[in-house]
Every structure is written in structure tokens, then in C-alpha cells.
Length: 168
Image (tube, rainbow, N blue to C red; front, side, top):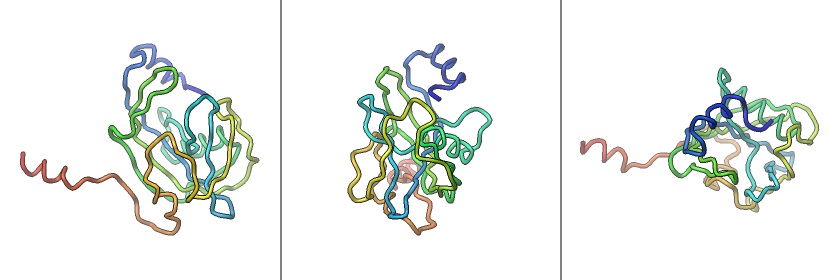
């Protein structure tokens, strides 16, 4: 779908400056346990099917919509796997727009559809073995892709933050 009206209007006001962007990403596995990745064909690295959460949309709704738009697959979010954010999740698009993502990552089950993108953002879709994936556009920890049966939610944590807070 490209950029929504909300983000277009925001960009008209702030230009390419850094903005926070709440997003979702979906981990979709085939029967062999391989993970579906997307390539936009514009020089960006591979990524999970992902995108911005729209105004009034819950994260689980957003991942269903984004996966359908970018892959043609109907999915149901099975579990929240991880939450990412902070300066390591800043990204600059080829057009110069800067974002700092806050990402809700869901593991999703395919319910139907056909692997064929609905929007124009996707150039190529391919499944990869978690141990042999190409470099991704965002620095997700590698172990998140091999974590298939854990109910533990991964989130970024640095124990030095707690020490810094207690010293203030």
C-alpha cells in the first residue's frame, strides 16, 4: 500500500526528520520451518513482512493486514515473540526519511491465500532456513528465529540501565 495518509501528512510537516514509528513484523514459517522474507528490490536489505501500525489499529490487526498486503497470505498471530526499539532500530529509507521503530514481532500461522504480493512494495518473497538467512535490514538477534516453542517474550534489556537509574 505504501505510505498511509497519516504518515504522508506527518512527513509533509516534518520532512525527512527522525520520527517514532510503531510497527509490526511477522515471522511466518513453512512446513520445513523456513522463515519468509521480503525483498523490495530497491537496494534495501531483506526484511520480515512488516509495516507501520495505523491510527486506530491494534498491533495484531496490523500484522494481519501488513502480511496480507506484502505476501498475499492470510495469517493469524499465534503469539507475541518480541518487542524491539531504541536507537539500534533507527532506519533511513532510500528517500532519506528517518524512523525509529518500536516493533511488535508476532509469530503467525498461515490460514490461506497465495504467496503473491498485493502491494507494490514487494519485489521478491523467499523462504530461508533460520541458520542460513541473508543479512536483514534491522538488527534482530539471530536466536529469535530459532526460538520455535518458547512462550517467553523477548525484549531488549540492559542491566546497566537499572544501575544508572538507581544511581540517580
